[in-house]
Length: 292
Length: 250
Image (cartoon, rainbow over all chains, first blue to last red):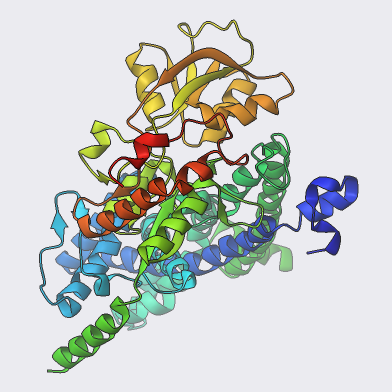
């Protein structure tokens, strides 16, 4: 980065530190914050979509939909995350490559041979010769999908509970006005349930934020991986040898997570106030009284 | 019909690209001097230099991938990369699930690194990396084993007193002891484990294994492999080399 960094072992003090903190690996570390933030930013809405679909299915009148929703919620919640992340992702990857192999492989052989999964090179996703970028992007997409399924199941349970919590009187009134079940759902139930769902969803959000180290199981290098890798003691084999500095790196992560928590709490607090407005809840009642 | 056309188009694309297919080399990137991620964020170490040379000799385009040690074999089998090049010792247990090339490093010594020279290994616990031959050895000897996911953590465990010693490849521990300023010492006891270090392949990948085998042999024959092993930044002049045994059948 700087011209004086050419021979890191000859420099000292502040110069050394500025070279050290701008090494290629540190730049990767800084980028990994963006990886984590974008993962969370993409996963949160996707998980909400899964959760909403799951909750709606779980309380449907139609039996197969209800069964599907309830099985999804209870099964995914019951499987330990680490198992899910180790095996589901490999299975998902193979589930993508198998149909592709049927289309592009000349022999179409059964790919599961003993412990191995063998498809012709053209069926690999992404192809082995693809840019490293595509391999990373593919791994990232698998990660987002897996996170969305796992957190979607938890969100579904939260939303299911929230839907059940909306006072029956509200729905009955709507029915008395002649609204169809669909209209009741859309106009009355969904707008009112959010305030009940919010505490549970905010918990999930915080857990999701802190679950990103699971990314390394999927081969994605996140902030915790880099903190451990950069902080570990370095011998003379490295350009910047140093003792065990993991404590400092983890302190940086601590600050990052605390900052994220603070920001989230601010946003969630405002959201809660907004959702409570005019609701038939204690918080809504308190707001009404304060205004009067 | 549309599907057929698409399939044909994809197949033609595939064959056109076959000629320059990329071989993906999977490594751990946390075990200097075998392999590590250097300060530029790239894979470096003995295996990097050797792997690049092997690919050149075999006429292959290679790309480096890092993967956690725990899942390095399952990910090879599911095809995320084609070769394991991660200081992996050849053992019968591993031979059951993957195939090895001929060794590129002769069987190396494993050693203990401890805070003082008079520790009681028997009462332990002794730290080792998960799923390594060293971890297996400690368990076999009836010592108390503490397993860690990365080599770095095993050494840290000794420093903070969780374990009395760490058991690992001697070549990994020597610089740790030398640069600790006397805080860590190598114990005199050394154990020879494993059948040398080799490249790992899927059982079905005999063709690729053949290419790498030939390349390793040619590096042994012209002495470049031995010259690389004894480089100061890797294993040093005192390292065990192939010598004349490597030149048999050249």
